[in-house]
Every structure is written in C-alpha cells, then in structure tokens.
Image (cartoon, rainbow, N blue to C red; front, side, top):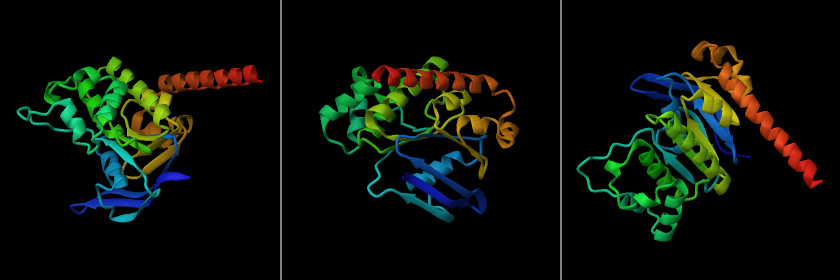
Length: 246
C-alpha cells in the first residue's frame, strides 16, 4: 500500500506549465529517487507532494496520519541571527531534549549543539537539517538534493547515513539527486522527470530507457555496473544467509 501517490498531477505557476500528468507512488520502506535536468520541476514535485504547493490538476493521496520529514534544497539563515544547533532542533516543536540528543548523535552532530548554524560546514549544516526532519520519526523522509555543494566523501557519508536512517526508522525515502551513481546504487525505484514523467522503474530499466539516455547521455554504464555489482552482492549475501539459517 502506498504511503503517498500522485494521480495526474499538474502544476501551473504564472501561466507556465511546470508539471503535467505525473503519476507516481511511494511505498513503505522504498527509496524512490527523482532525476532530471535543471528546470524539470523536481523541487515543485516534492513541494506538491508534501502540501507546500497547490496542484493545478490531479490529486495527491496521502496515507491517513502520514508523518513527513522534509529537508529542503536550500535554507538561508541570516549570518547575524543567533541560532545554535540546539535551538534549531527546538524549533521543530519537539520539546524532548533527550530525543534531541539522540537524533544529534544518530546523525553525527552531538558535539555541535552549541555551535551557530551559520558557522557549520556544508555537511554539518545538512546533517542539522536532517536531524530536525527526523525528530518527528517520519514515515516518509523527503530530501531535495541534500548533498548539493558537498565533496565526494561528504556525499558518500551523507547517503550512507540516509540508508541507516531508513533501516532504523523503517521509513520510506523520496529524494531528488543529481548523482547518478548514488541513484543507481541506492534506489529501489527511479523517476526520470522533465516536466512530466519520461520513464520510471528500477535503476536498470530506467538506465536503458531511450528517454533517460536522451537526457543524460549514454555514459551511465559505470553507474549501472556499480549498481548491478552491489545488487548481486547483496542478493548473494542474502541467499548465503538463508542457506546458513536453514
């Protein structure tokens, strides 16, 4: 059963059609990644799904009581504003300081609670945003290009953290990403967007789709090979574990 789904979703702003005829769904524990060129409507899609943007056409259906944690692409904080990490977490509305500390430890910022948000590095700042989103223990974690501006090690570390969070909270993840290697390695389902859904399916299916290759070129074999290698490795490991258990 879907946690959230869009049916015939369209968004028009200022007389311009941003999205049209978008159908998608996210199921429990699923990692769904949206890819597409700049200006393809990815952020608008996320905002429409979480209720921050009103669709012009179609509907968004959310599971009753669905808890959504959202990490935006950018969050501008005034350099002159005194806002510590601890205060930022308190703004979530969750008052339990012990829970704040547990989440901070989980995302690796427990030593930064007294630091000003404006003084954090890019990776630390994203982890602080993630911590705030996790405080409500969401059923669905929505991430809009969460590693933008991070170097390769920072990106890898952040995505490993996301996979751990998914396991810990038993939540689904819907994210926008430009890192095709990460998409192929980590996603259960990929949606290729360019104002509408060009194609969607497993990473293998989407990588081989002409619509995807027309947008991103044919140089995705390395990412796909990495996905296949890790997928096969996990499959073999699971089979080995099953035979040991038997």
